[in-house]
Image (cartoon, rainbow, N blue to C red; front, side):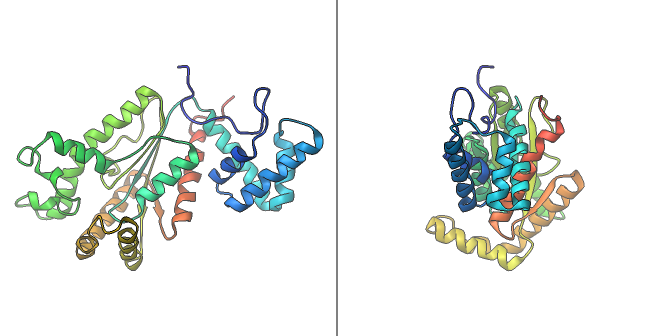
Length: 299
């Protein structure tokens, strides 16, 4: 393997490249430091280097400047987080982040930002996989994949709970494609973020030899807040996805959420509350940075 599988070294500077203020600010933002404070610290480090004539920042000096700029507690947290990011970036294996959750919980927004912060360029969704499968399998061959997740039960007859049974049936088919996408990511050695309602805990691989997998389920506990997400999405997309359709089926959508959260708790998958998208993103990032702990600190 001639290319790094995941991230780049921390932008502290080395024999080949000098310290980069922009890359340092990005790394700090990735760990959860607010953007304005991240740029302030990155600039302070640049000025510190200019005063000493050095090209690189040692971690000890980074820690001192971080405490001066951010304060003792926030500075120590930034140092600790940056070290954890360094550990994650140093791993010679792909990281696969799976972000599940019912319709309208902000999965795609969280997935895009998590990928951006971690420098992951491959982002896809289980809906994309389902749409691809629909091109190959007709309604007669595989009816469950030709409906929304909360409408798949209409393709079943005689089940006591067609809503959940239909959702499970659809997810079972889509997870075949999800598994293939994950294994392709492993084969190519590139990290990936995959989001979607079909990422049901227990139905997707919890581990994959040669890769690190983080699986979370996003939840919106408050129903009014959940409804508001559909209004926000409708405004952001210009009404491309019919809001009324989702609001009319909000009870069914939230029943699927309850099913997913219950499965997550049973399977040991983290549940992330999306009360505010910034906190939800920070939570997923923190969990991702802890992945290196599974294989020990790189030497």
